Length: 107
Length: 125
Image 1 (cartoon, helix red, strand yellow):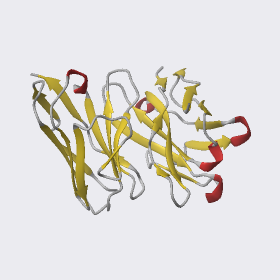
Image 2 (tube, chains in turn green, purple):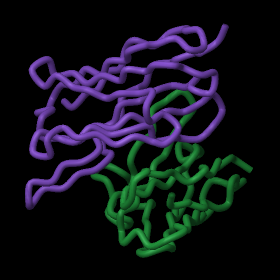
Image 3 (cartoon, helix red, strand yellow):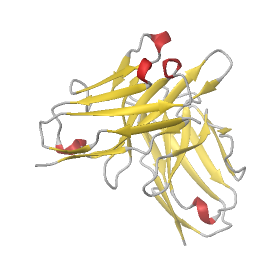
């Protein structure tokens, strides 16, 4: 199985901060990676597909990059509604696997 | 409007069975792969399995943790997908989401773009 190592597992930040979350795949997955935001009691919401493509309707403060084994999600200026848990997902190889999540909390 | 709505969750005893349903609307089910993803209370997301589209003969894939116990099927005429869960274990307790997971027609591509809100399955005696 491909392991997706996501870091950090939790992060405290302030409104206006720039934050970056990373995902490392245990083997190459090309750009078959998505990033998702989940708020308590809600379904995950896709932010990014194909490693760096922004989902329509998602604010441009979200950006992502990477290919192969190293990926990152950056929020350029945190807004109050961005405090949530973020997951990466690889769909290159079965079984499809998620990172363990990054909980983004208000400092 | 694209929608996926799960139903069928509830309390079941260990070694019991349950069938979840996923009713879809706003798109042609036969064109899409649909996955099931679960989330145990307070835990992360875990992929459960996949149903490919009509063009790929509705073939399926499963996570090792559920293979041989869970079966995904669909009835495109009813715009519905199903997850039959047998020999349930306490560790299967989770919210189960169905997800529209893949589409590609040579020009348009999408993956994991729409998720249902989920249905809670509790396995406990």
